Length: 219
Image (cartoon, rainbow, N blue to C red; front, side):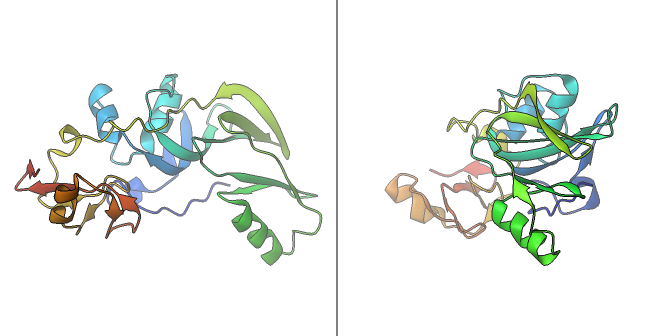
């Protein structure tokens, strides 16, 4: 069973954009962000409305993940092997997996959330967690967790993935460089200090929010 609560960063809030995503061979969910979403759409001539979709399109097409810039954790199923669920984390993403006697494997985005759920369900007494190394794909099948030879070679953000070219079709206003959402940050606060990072009104993180004016970038 795969369940996912989405915090929408890229793409409208609607059923089509909800995880897990279903393609020809792969059904999967991603907790995290793909920073170079628009670049990947252009390079691979895709129309992915949600940044996370690129991870599963790459996996399905057999592409290396190194040209994807992002972080997070994934869970996915290959329809040719429906009894296996594949799990992994990359670039600082969090993933916690526990084994519960007589029940099997359960997992969550964080160990804190995982133990909270197990305690609430009275399943925490004999449960224990696995060490999940970054970049490794794990296979969960019939209550057992094993490492595979597959790797999640996603690249960390290189600082150039988000450009004006990416957002030239955006509506007038400001755009958060961190959560990729429209925000109400004032570009006047940024320009005098050379684009300083300030708490964004959309996500409350310290971001570099790009200003727009009638479709043109303001410097």
